[in-house]
Amino acid sequence: MSHRNDTTYAPSPQEAAEEQKSFQRVVNSFRAYRVHSHRRVRKAMLVIDRMQPEHRRLLEEYRKHLDQVRVSIDHNAEFLNELTVDIAKMFENQEIHEVDPQIAQELAPTEGDMDKVRTVLKQFCREWSEVGRVEREQSFQPLIRELEKLFPDGVRNEVQVLVPGAGLGRLPFELALRGFACQGNEYSFFMLCASCFMLNRCKQTEMFRIYPYVHQFTNNMRNADQVRSVPIPDVNPAQAGANPNFSMTAGNFVEVYSAQPDMWDAVVTCFFIDTAQNVIEYIDTIHKCLKPGGYWLNLGPLMYHYADMLKEDSIEPSYEDIKTITREVGFDIVRDETDLTSSYCSNPESMLRYEYSSVFMLCRKPEAS
Image (cartoon, rainbow, N blue to C red; front, top):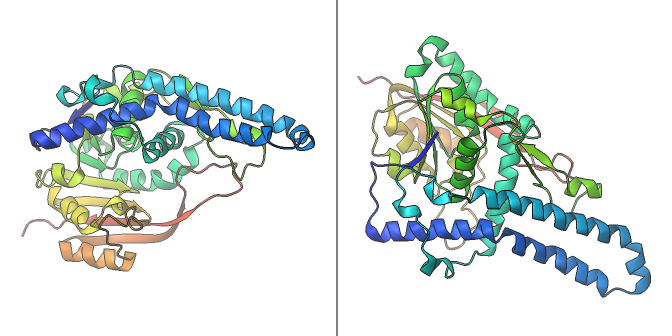
């Protein structure tokens, strides 16, 4: 299954150089996982070592648990190292992905980069494990069912479906399995590397075991919950190979798809529109790239990822405002639902769990008058 950079948007030489550096930083982050993660365990061990003897004695079992945490981190590191093998060949046009040794050492991962690596592990669990089935039922299935109602089985191979913010590719994968001509789009190199690995190099179920909760040191009911292993994938990703009209593209959604007017029969967004700094740009781009009569299906909350970043611009319209904006851009809102319970990369065994009260919208771009 192809992973490629979109050819309709050509970055400048300076942008291409920055993109290459960003990609190299992602590779460095995956490869730094083991050393970086062991520091957290080492810190806990040192705290125990400084305690009075009686307290150390009471923590003997906990210390054994920390040893198991370290082993679990090693297993994750082996998996992530496997993920980075031949990573420069992940896209069809490879020139921006060649590893440059001169800049590799300059691009040491930040704490934010390492947090994204940990997020990737949890994202594997959400999208490609049996453990994530509940979340996928909450978030993916309402969209899938609605799209199936809109387009009967016999015509789906001609229905062009775009999934922006595709993450590790499970939602477009599920749509491709149902016969749709589907393209996922993702901006994050962290997610792109992981989705490429899953969709192209995993040829059977449960090929790997990961430990997505090993970095959760708080709110654990049992020690075993922190070092719980999760087999991935729960289905064979190679199944999608039967549909030649399934692909993943890399690039900024607005830049790539604003250059594709009237091309798509449906745009499906899941936990996506609140990743925008200006959500109107997203809604406008969705409207622009849809064919007249095309549908936009959306599900998710309005968390607004840039809202609390002091150095970043952000607007945070309410759902009431979003509906007004959607109509003003030119959509008809066919129907919407509120209070849909959904969680995202949650730990089902944790003493602390977050749930969203998400919204669902089905919108239609009117036929040309």
